Length: 309
Ligand code: NAP
Ligand code: GLV
Image (cartoon, rainbow, N blue to C red; front, side):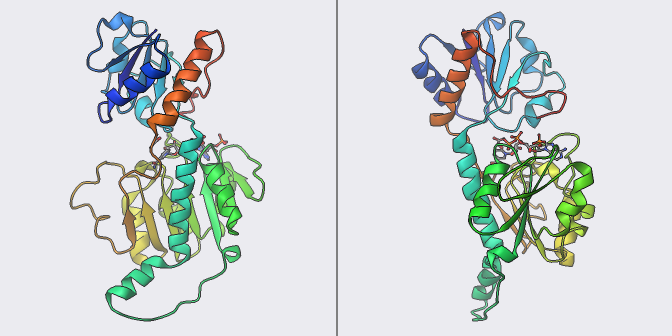
């Protein structure tokens, strides 16, 4: 089987070496050294050049390096009849949970405020509510969101979750769909976004959403930049409706020099690092999924292309 690695922004050779080591029967090539286009049966992709996946007439499956497939499906020439497999790796969920906990605790413990006081050499104490008195709302209760939500409940936070269809997660109050959104937001003091980017969720973090949260709430966006209406977020931060935001993802990445987020006193920026796919764990999952499929089994973690996730 010929597997083409198309990851122009990542180290394609390290994926090739891992795949080859795990399954020496695979003929692994790294884009742009494709060989004959008709040889390619499977592609492993991240930020592939637009239209490229339409060039391989015998392509039978596409694997995404990332959990989010918005970039792959955002290619208008993506061959939509070819199954797309997204990355579901427990290691990704563990590192996302670490990041979400760090961001939530930073807001919960007022660490930004104390960093500000330190710059002015001021010794002033603030009382903070107990975790049980702080409501954290997690948007998206999938592979990443559900695990992060559970970890937050273990820390004692009052956690609520919101998804497209209603989900039952132990210890969480759950809400679903547009009908459940207002009730979900009404008490949420720290909002964590772990939604996929789809036509339904694009721009969901807007003025209307922020206005429904208690004044002085915080936002943690670790999903996709295009979930945020940037002007609305800046206005909410400037007015005090939101007290702070941790932003790991941006509509344009890298975040352009001069962007208003860079120097906003209430924004912490991280460069899309909340959870990075690890070659060591993810290559094993890809090769095992491929092995079972070649043996006649079904591919795991296939995306619903119509739904967009
Ligand atoms: P997932 O398993 O597909 O879960 C998606 C969740 O979002 C599900 O609970 C789903 O609802 C919910 N959802 C989808 N559309 C919705 C809508 N219109 N309204 C309400 N809820 C909706 O995805 P995942 O693996 O947890 O990953 C989530 C996202 O994290 C990825 O798509 C990616 O963008 C982002 N991510 C970021 C990083 C980073 O480093 N910053 C790393 C990895 C992933 P149902 O349960 O009803 O289906
Ligand atoms: C990273 O953003 C991913 O989708 O895995």
